[in-house]
Structures are given as C-alpha cells and as structure tokens.
Amino acid sequence: MKPNQTSLMSQRRRERASVLVIVLWIAIGLISIALYFANSMTYELRASDNRVSGLETDQAIEGAARYVAWVLNTYSTNGSVPNNTQFSCEAVPVGDAHFWLIGRNPAETPSGWWTKPAS
Image (cartoon, rainbow, N blue to C red; front, side, top):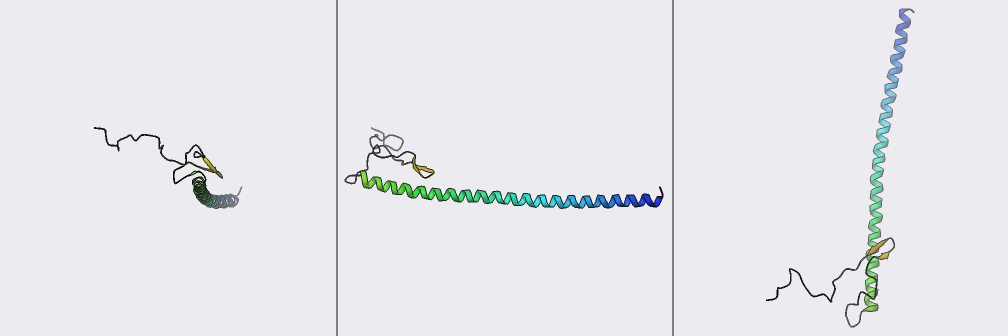
C-alpha cells in the first residue's frame, strides 16, 4: 500500500469513530431526558393517588357524620346516648373506606392516674 492510501484509511476510521462518539452522546442525552420525565410522571402518579385518597377520606367523614346523625335520630330517647349494641360502630364501611365510633364505656368505674385516690 502506498502511504497516501494508509493515511486516507486512518482518516476514515477517525471520522467513523467521531460519528460513533457523537451518536453515543446523543443517545445518553435522550436516555437521561426519558429518565427525567419518567421520574416526573412517578411524582404525578403519587400526587393523583393522594388526591383520590383525600377525596375518599372526605366522603368517609361525610358518611360517618350522616350515619351518626341517623343513629342519634333513630335510637336516642330523651337525650340519652343510645346503647352501642343497637347499631354498628366498628369498621362501618363507606365505599372503600371504613370508620369506627370510639367512645368510653359508661358502665366502667373511673380508674387511673387522673382520679383522686380513696383516703
């Protein structure tokens, strides 16, 4: 081979190598942009899930308030608190949510650190 042909072939190899490097840099840039937007969409998905959960919670609170109003209208007599055996008060379903009615037992005698000890 002539020296002129050798230098021409090495120049072509350099050009091909530089094109390969440029294509690799473009591919890395596109991949990083895709990963950035995928991460952004993950945050959007979490935000929309939190919004749905918040709306479901608001509906459960509204349903619980209506249920308590119905229980008080139906079972209370002369202003007394109805007995909790007459209605459901544990894990009452409202759509996909549940609520509990929490209170104290009126038949229980007071005990604990807040009561005055007997002298």
